[in-house]
Image 1 (tube, rainbow, N blue to C red):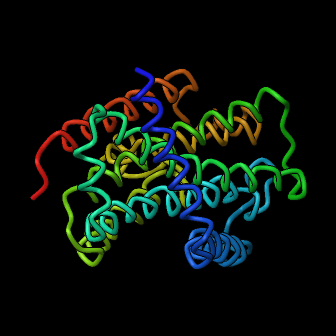
Image 2: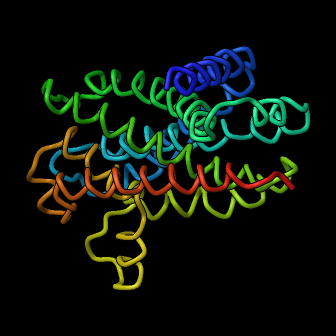
Length: 257
């Protein structure tokens, strides 16, 4: 058991140090979501009617945080492909440690990066006129960690089967923006066609956005836009995390191609 945790901790630390040594990755994970948020919020400022006295920038704020988490967690798993090319991954796989320790080390590393960056932007909420209690703040942090872990695990599953960063980008681009668009970050679930509503309900990001909006805004807004209930949201996110952890471990147990 100690070897399992030691291996996971070592890989986790390596992911953290590696990420912050590459300044371009930090910029690439933070700047695009900020630009999207500012441009979308400013563009909708004259066309979006105030919702419960919220400005457009306030309304899109949870979606911006989710996009930061999405970019950071998914693209942190590119290191798996780089480790394979450099031979580091092969040396890790022959080590006498359980495969789940490798999965946990890589996934927790990416999830920690996404969680830390998302948490920093949560602290900006009071400056935008968004006020929350300590309970809602803790709920938001828990939500960020759960979705960070799940998204990093999803990226792990894709990256593990790739042997080139170009192929990884091609597959991820098919998932990245649709996941965000169908999360309720850009438009509410209320009033959407039934087929689109079904896709949104199948999207785990929908439940993370709902939890963030429960924490940031009043329950009146949540009731108006028919958000899923908080307990349901937590259950879905936990199920999603467990599913990607199991799938990642199964993939990691297979021989490399």
